[in-house]
Image 1: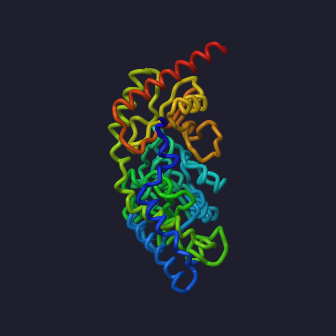
Image 2: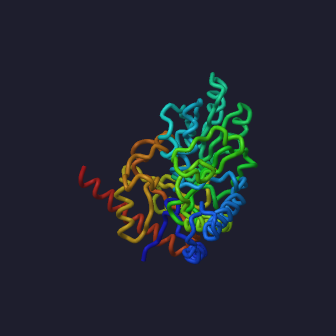
Length: 372
């Protein structure tokens, strides 16, 4: 029996989403065609735009469909190269690698962006055009960032604000209008929709600075060339409709009980970001002088699927830049595993997992002693 504990990497697709996508297979028209089949395809795309717009409190007409969050972040950050740009040190690589000239803002030991430093460096900037990118929820630690306060700083200095909200949808409330967000990235497969589809939501004022990175036939208001992935967009819209009702918001008690059990059975375990505001389903647990890669493989053999951090590196396991940015020691950084729940766990499941985890830790610790 396998227990999937890696929801932040990819959520199981919802049955309702599968059903809706299956029924839409017979939509054959190209959305750019003006005949009946084309208009039918266009309508379901616009319906999905409406559903997603309601979920994130955005103007549906200002939603640009992309192949996923990575492309959406690339599109958002493409305009930052002409501005004085400020990015937190814990952003996803799809943000960090878009602008090598960006100013990197440090975070606290709990993984929260340093607001005082952010405002200080923006205030000292000689550039008139300013771009800020801060994620809503960190994908590794689950720590919630103070987007409201970041937004207030951006408003004071008339800065463009981009928020990577991939790990926020279905976990916490996120609103483009409430937080005055200019560019917002979300992904379908993180909320129970199909893989290969995401979007960038854009404020009215940000449209004037945005430039397409994929040229083509003028789809998506000219910002993303190529025939739209109709079936995936339908699934994305359906997932967005149900996003605020996902069971993951109810997993806090399971997550807390699991953490308590881990610490009671393995006192040397470190819960990273424990004292910071976190989403309910995410726990990043570190074990000193243990290889996270070995731990993930050993747990997989035992039937438990966890992660060693971000799942967007093609299977590559490397030191987490997020944990390094938080100032953690190397022997902790290298031994951190992420557990992210998609449903509540019962006590027997938690006990079984912790028992296996302790057995694996003891085995790996014994191997290390023998080798040394």
